[in-house]
Each structure stands twice: as C-alpha cells, then as structure tokens.
Image 1 (cartoon, rainbow, N blue to C red):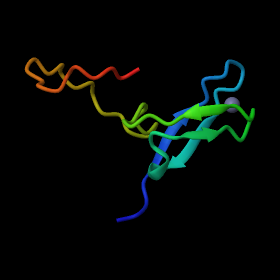
Image 2 (cartoon, rainbow, N blue to C red):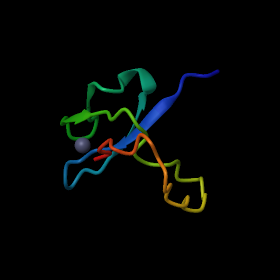
Image 3 (tube, rainbow, N blue to C red):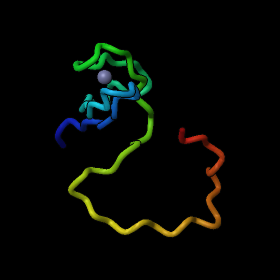
Image 4 (cartoon, helix red, strand yellow):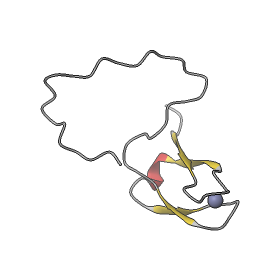
Length: 71
Ligand SMILES: [Zn+2]
C-alpha cells in the first residue's frame, strides 16, 4: 500500500493553502509552505478528496464512539 497523505488547509486567513502531508504527521504540527505558519495535523481526515463526490452519509443514530470532538 502506498504512503497515505493527509490534506489539510492552512487556517491562516488569506492563505488557505491546501497542504498534503504524510499520514505519519498526524498529531504533529507542520509548517505551511506558503505562509510559514504552523498547522496541527488532525488525527482524522478533515476534508474528503476534491474529486470524490460521495453523497453525505446519513448521521449514525447509534454511534458508540461519537463523543470525540472533530474540530
Ligand atoms: Zn499558510
């Protein structure tokens, strides 16, 4: 399996650069190549691939582990 990359968007207003970082960077901070700001890489995927046009999944009514803050 190929190395997975995580796509994150720079939170800096006026930058909004989409960065692709290796999945090994999850939980760490990376530096934005555009503005030089530090961005924390979340453990979970924050954005789906732009090419993917999957319909929004129905909200799971009975999710046992739904107590995690995603943002
Ligand atoms: Zn930036």
